[in-house]
Every structure is written in structure tokens, then in C-alpha cells.
Length: 148
Image (cartoon, rainbow, N blue to C red; front, side, top):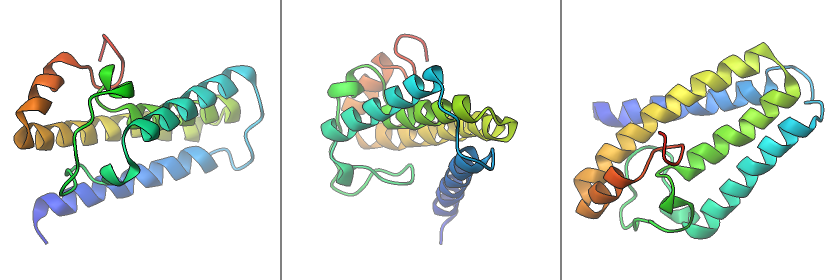
């Protein structure tokens, strides 16, 4: 097993561990509140739009592009490079707002850093693969349209 593969697997394991900690961090079911529910709904809507735009079989769990996968530049990808990562972060932020658990919030913050790192590795891989992605990458922000 080569080193880059292990690194990408570790990132995925950490990512899923942090998601579980966010979801289970309070030790009880989240309590409904409007702000949390709205942020959760926004994340779910963005995730659904992303899946409707980019085939699920086009996604890869690690940062390497799947063999035969096609690049997607429309739908939410017109505005940001990683809409599914943002959808996950928004949905989990909504859960954090409803659970008000410091452990969930800390895990969410750590997940932001992990997904940022994973997105950078993914972008490097895609730039090597395609000049189209390199041009797209220079014009499109990572997670927040017009900002970052």
C-alpha cells in the first residue's frame, strides 16, 4: 500500500469519526429550535441539489478522482467547488445548534479543518487531471461563494 493511499484513508476515517461525534456528542436527541432546523434544512437542500446535479457514482470517498468520472461545473458547482462538503457542514451545524453540546461543536470545528484539507488534496488531484478544472478552480471558491 503506497503512502498517499493510506493518508487519504486516514482523512476519511477521521472525517467519519468526527461526523459521528457531532451527531452523538450531546448523548441525547437534539432539541428542535428554528435556527438549527433552518441550517439543517439548508444543508439537506444543498446536498440534494448537489446529488441531483452530479451523479452519486461520480463521487469518491477519498480525494482521488474515480476512474472514468466526469467533471461537473453546473448546478451548485457554478458557485463553489465543494458543495457536498458544505452541505455536510451546514447540516451538522444545524445539529450542533439544536444539541448545544460543546463536544459536538468541537468535533464540527475539527471537521471543517479536515474537509478543508481533503478539498485541497482533491483539487490538486483534479488540476493534474484536467486543464478545465484548473481554469474552473481559479474562478470558483472552495466553500463560500465569493469569499473562500
